[in-house]
Amino acid sequence: MHPGIKIVNLILFSIFLTQGNWLTLLIMGALLLPFYLSMKNIWQSALQMFVRLKWLFLSILLIYYFYTPNLSHSSSFVFTAELERLIPGLFRISILLTILFSVNLFLKSTTKDEILAALMWIFSPLAKININIERISLRAILTIEYIEQLSERLKNYKEQQRMILDKNDMDSFLLKKKKAFLHLIKHSGIILQETLKEAESTSGKLYSIELLSPPALIQFIFPLMISLLFYLSLFFR
Image (cartoon, rainbow, N blue to C red; front, side, top):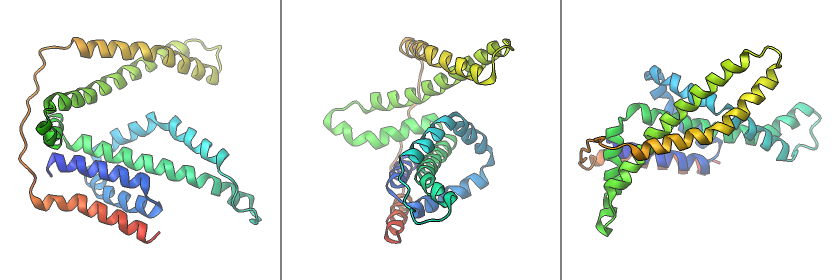
Protein backbone atom coordinates (compact mmCIF):
# COMPACT_ATOMS: atom_id res chain seq x y z
CA MET A 1 0.00 0.00 0.00
CA HIS A 2 1.21 3.52 -0.80
CA PRO A 3 2.72 5.12 2.38
CA GLY A 4 0.73 8.30 1.78
CA ILE A 5 -2.51 6.30 1.73
CA LYS A 6 -1.43 4.67 5.00
CA ILE A 7 -1.10 8.08 6.65
CA VAL A 8 -4.48 9.22 5.27
CA ASN A 9 -6.06 6.00 6.54
CA LEU A 10 -4.52 6.52 9.99
CA ILE A 11 -5.77 10.11 10.21
CA LEU A 12 -9.31 9.21 9.12
CA PHE A 13 -9.29 6.16 11.38
CA SER A 14 -8.39 8.25 14.44
CA ILE A 15 -10.83 11.08 13.67
CA PHE A 16 -13.75 8.75 13.05
CA LEU A 17 -13.06 6.80 16.24
CA THR A 18 -13.20 9.94 18.38
CA GLN A 19 -16.46 11.02 16.72
CA GLY A 20 -18.20 7.64 16.59
CA ASN A 21 -20.09 5.31 18.87
CA TRP A 22 -19.74 1.73 20.11
CA LEU A 23 -20.60 0.35 16.66
CA THR A 24 -17.88 2.54 15.12
CA LEU A 25 -15.42 1.17 17.67
CA LEU A 26 -16.37 -2.42 16.86
CA ILE A 27 -16.09 -1.87 13.11
CA MET A 28 -12.71 -0.15 13.33
CA GLY A 29 -11.44 -2.81 15.71
CA ALA A 30 -12.58 -5.48 13.24
CA LEU A 31 -10.53 -3.76 10.52
CA LEU A 32 -7.40 -3.96 12.68
CA LEU A 33 -7.87 -7.54 13.85
CA PRO A 34 -6.78 -9.35 10.64
CA PHE A 35 -3.47 -7.44 10.62
CA TYR A 36 -2.69 -8.37 14.22
CA LEU A 37 -3.65 -12.00 13.63
CA SER A 38 -1.36 -12.23 10.60
CA MET A 39 1.52 -10.12 12.03
CA LYS A 40 2.01 -11.57 15.49
CA ASN A 41 5.42 -9.92 15.85
CA ILE A 42 3.78 -6.50 16.40
CA TRP A 43 1.91 -7.53 19.54
CA GLN A 44 4.88 -6.97 21.84
CA SER A 45 5.36 -3.31 20.93
CA ALA A 46 1.60 -2.67 21.20
CA LEU A 47 1.47 -4.21 24.66
CA GLN A 48 4.50 -2.21 25.74
CA MET A 49 2.74 0.99 24.70
CA PHE A 50 -0.32 -0.12 26.64
CA VAL A 51 1.72 -0.76 29.81
CA ARG A 52 3.35 2.67 29.56
CA LEU A 53 -0.09 4.32 29.41
CA LYS A 54 -1.74 2.24 32.12
CA TRP A 55 -1.88 5.13 34.60
CA LEU A 56 -3.45 7.39 31.99
CA PHE A 57 -6.16 4.80 31.37
CA LEU A 58 -6.76 4.37 35.08
CA SER A 59 -7.09 8.14 35.60
CA ILE A 60 -9.59 8.36 32.71
CA LEU A 61 -11.65 5.56 34.25
CA LEU A 62 -11.69 7.23 37.66
CA ILE A 63 -12.59 10.66 36.25
CA TYR A 64 -15.52 9.30 34.27
CA TYR A 65 -16.65 7.18 37.23
CA PHE A 66 -16.79 10.06 39.70
CA TYR A 67 -18.21 12.62 37.26
CA THR A 68 -20.81 10.45 35.52
CA PRO A 69 -24.23 10.75 37.16
CA ASN A 70 -26.13 7.62 38.11
CA LEU A 71 -28.78 7.31 35.40
CA SER A 72 -30.46 4.15 36.74
CA HIS A 73 -32.15 5.53 39.82
CA SER A 74 -34.88 2.92 39.53
CA SER A 75 -32.45 0.01 39.34
CA SER A 76 -32.58 -2.35 42.30
CA PHE A 77 -29.08 -3.62 41.62
CA VAL A 78 -26.28 -1.46 42.96
CA PHE A 79 -23.75 -3.27 40.76
CA THR A 80 -25.67 -2.37 37.59
CA ALA A 81 -25.83 1.28 38.56
CA GLU A 82 -22.12 1.40 39.33
CA LEU A 83 -21.27 -0.36 36.06
CA GLU A 84 -23.18 2.25 34.08
CA ARG A 85 -20.94 4.93 35.55
CA LEU A 86 -17.88 3.04 34.26
CA ILE A 87 -19.16 2.58 30.71
CA PRO A 88 -18.28 6.10 29.41
CA GLY A 89 -14.74 5.77 30.76
CA LEU A 90 -14.36 2.27 29.29
CA PHE A 91 -15.57 3.62 25.94
CA ARG A 92 -12.92 6.37 25.89
CA ILE A 93 -10.20 3.96 26.97
CA SER A 94 -11.23 1.53 24.22
CA ILE A 95 -10.99 4.34 21.66
CA LEU A 96 -7.49 5.29 22.82
CA LEU A 97 -6.42 1.64 22.77
CA THR A 98 -7.71 1.18 19.23
CA ILE A 99 -5.90 4.32 18.06
CA LEU A 100 -2.76 3.13 19.86
CA PHE A 101 -2.92 -0.23 18.09
CA SER A 102 -3.47 1.47 14.72
CA VAL A 103 -0.45 3.77 15.24
CA ASN A 104 1.64 0.78 16.27
CA LEU A 105 0.60 -1.08 13.11
CA PHE A 106 1.52 1.93 10.97
CA LEU A 107 4.96 2.35 12.56
CA LYS A 108 5.78 -1.35 12.32
CA SER A 109 4.68 -1.69 8.69
CA THR A 110 6.29 1.53 7.39
CA THR A 111 9.97 2.47 7.37
CA LYS A 112 11.15 5.95 8.35
CA ASP A 113 12.24 6.65 4.78
CA GLU A 114 8.75 5.73 3.58
CA ILE A 115 7.17 8.00 6.21
CA LEU A 116 9.41 10.87 5.14
CA ALA A 117 8.60 10.35 1.46
CA ALA A 118 4.89 10.02 2.25
CA LEU A 119 4.88 13.28 4.23
CA MET A 120 6.53 15.06 1.32
CA TRP A 121 3.87 13.66 -1.01
CA ILE A 122 1.07 14.81 1.33
CA PHE A 123 2.60 18.28 1.82
CA SER A 124 3.47 18.69 -1.87
CA PRO A 125 0.52 21.06 -2.57
CA LEU A 126 2.06 23.49 -0.06
CA ALA A 127 5.08 23.93 -2.33
CA LYS A 128 2.88 25.98 -4.66
CA ILE A 129 2.68 28.69 -1.99
CA ASN A 130 6.47 28.65 -1.39
CA ILE A 131 6.47 26.50 1.76
CA ASN A 132 9.55 24.35 2.24
CA ILE A 133 7.99 20.89 2.37
CA GLU A 134 11.39 19.21 2.80
CA ARG A 135 11.97 21.06 6.08
CA ILE A 136 8.48 20.24 7.38
CA SER A 137 8.81 16.56 6.48
CA LEU A 138 12.31 16.28 7.94
CA ARG A 139 11.25 17.86 11.22
CA ALA A 140 8.37 15.41 11.45
CA ILE A 141 10.65 12.39 10.98
CA LEU A 142 13.22 13.80 13.45
CA THR A 143 10.42 14.20 16.00
CA ILE A 144 9.55 10.53 15.62
CA GLU A 145 13.20 9.52 16.05
CA TYR A 146 13.86 11.58 19.16
CA ILE A 147 10.56 10.67 20.79
CA GLU A 148 11.76 7.06 20.63
CA GLN A 149 15.10 8.04 22.15
CA LEU A 150 13.42 10.07 24.89
CA SER A 151 11.14 7.16 25.74
CA GLU A 152 14.09 4.77 25.92
CA ARG A 153 16.08 7.13 28.17
CA LEU A 154 13.15 7.59 30.54
CA LYS A 155 12.74 3.82 30.67
CA ASN A 156 16.42 3.31 31.52
CA TYR A 157 16.33 6.05 34.17
CA LYS A 158 13.22 4.51 35.73
CA GLU A 159 14.95 1.13 35.89
CA GLN A 160 18.01 2.66 37.54
CA GLN A 161 15.87 4.37 40.17
CA ARG A 162 14.00 1.15 40.84
CA MET A 163 17.25 -0.69 41.50
CA ILE A 164 18.44 2.08 43.84
CA LEU A 165 15.18 2.19 45.79
CA ASP A 166 15.01 -1.61 46.06
CA LYS A 167 18.19 -1.52 48.11
CA ASN A 168 16.32 0.31 50.86
CA ASP A 169 14.32 -2.54 52.36
CA MET A 170 12.92 -0.27 55.08
CA ASP A 171 10.60 1.52 52.65
CA SER A 172 7.18 0.11 51.92
CA PHE A 173 6.06 -0.79 48.41
CA LEU A 174 3.88 2.32 48.05
CA LEU A 175 6.64 4.58 49.38
CA LYS A 176 9.09 3.16 46.85
CA LYS A 177 6.62 3.78 44.04
CA LYS A 178 6.04 7.33 45.26
CA LYS A 179 9.77 8.11 45.41
CA ALA A 180 10.36 6.60 41.96
CA PHE A 181 7.50 8.64 40.50
CA LEU A 182 8.75 11.90 42.06
CA HIS A 183 12.29 11.24 40.84
CA LEU A 184 10.98 10.57 37.33
CA ILE A 185 9.00 13.84 37.28
CA LYS A 186 11.97 15.80 38.60
CA HIS A 187 14.49 14.44 36.10
CA SER A 188 12.26 13.95 33.04
CA GLY A 189 12.68 17.64 32.20
CA ILE A 190 16.46 17.29 32.41
CA ILE A 191 16.40 14.24 30.14
CA LEU A 192 14.18 16.12 27.69
CA GLN A 193 16.61 19.07 27.60
CA GLU A 194 19.54 16.73 26.99
CA THR A 195 17.68 15.02 24.15
CA LEU A 196 16.78 18.36 22.53
CA LYS A 197 20.39 19.61 22.77
CA GLU A 198 21.57 16.41 21.17
CA ALA A 199 19.03 16.81 18.38
CA GLU A 200 20.11 20.40 17.74
CA SER A 201 23.82 19.53 17.73
CA THR A 202 23.37 16.56 15.39
CA SER A 203 24.82 17.37 12.01
CA GLY A 204 25.96 15.50 8.95
CA LYS A 205 23.20 12.90 9.15
CA LEU A 206 21.90 12.06 5.72
CA TYR A 207 18.36 11.10 4.88
CA SER A 208 17.47 9.57 1.57
CA ILE A 209 14.25 11.01 0.22
CA GLU A 210 12.64 9.02 -2.54
CA LEU A 211 10.01 11.02 -4.35
CA LEU A 212 6.84 8.98 -4.46
CA SER A 213 4.65 8.67 -7.47
CA PRO A 214 0.92 9.18 -6.86
CA PRO A 215 -0.85 6.05 -5.62
CA ALA A 216 -2.96 3.99 -7.97
CA LEU A 217 -6.56 5.13 -8.06
CA ILE A 218 -7.70 1.75 -6.73
CA GLN A 219 -5.87 2.47 -3.44
CA PHE A 220 -8.17 5.39 -2.70
CA ILE A 221 -10.85 2.81 -2.05
CA PHE A 222 -9.35 2.25 1.42
CA PRO A 223 -10.00 5.75 2.84
CA LEU A 224 -13.36 5.75 1.07
CA MET A 225 -14.22 2.42 2.69
CA ILE A 226 -13.25 3.70 6.14
CA SER A 227 -15.40 6.81 5.61
CA LEU A 228 -18.35 4.71 4.40
CA LEU A 229 -18.16 2.37 7.37
CA PHE A 230 -18.05 5.33 9.74
CA TYR A 231 -21.22 6.90 8.31
CA LEU A 232 -22.97 3.53 8.27
CA SER A 233 -22.16 3.11 11.98
CA LEU A 234 -23.74 6.50 12.69
CA PHE A 235 -26.80 5.57 10.64
CA PHE A 236 -27.40 2.46 12.77
CA ARG A 237 -26.84 4.33 16.03
